[in-house]
Image 1 (cartoon, rainbow, N blue to C red):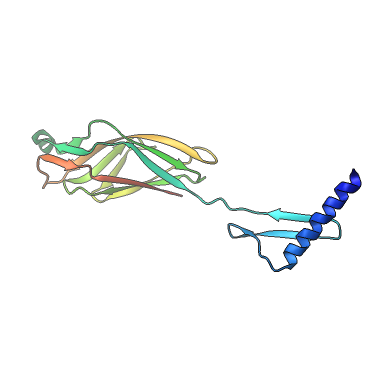
Image 2 (cartoon, one colour; image 1 turned 120 degrees about the vertical axis):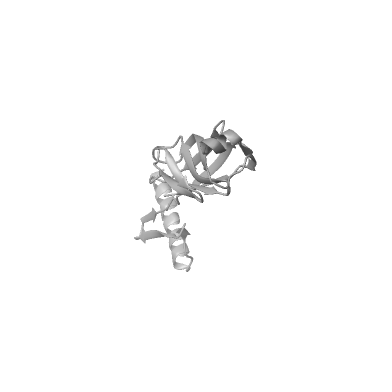
Length: 169
């Protein structure tokens, strides 16, 4: 039995030598496969790089924001209900959650439900969120929004003004 294993090992080494000396380049995500060959033994080292990834899925959000006369008098509107998003990330450094405002009826946005409460300017902004462990992590965020109204805001129904996206850190 041992001479069969020795013959299989020698056959594998010969095949690897033919492959390496035929000019074929091997690689995995841009990293080389390194082989060291002696007469009867071969050592193969493989390296791989795992790319950082992050994704965001909106699970629930209002379709619109209703601004009433009472909201204008108060200077802000609290959005009833939560905006719920699912974030997946494999980055050890966490991820950057980005808010892009597309509403002209507000001058600031306050967001609750993150690691800390956040105040964003009229155009939006971004917030770093820490990693919740090693490997791919999944987090569901329940976010509350308060829109501080611009002086030009009028009562009415506005399309949902915030677009969220995520990028790994």
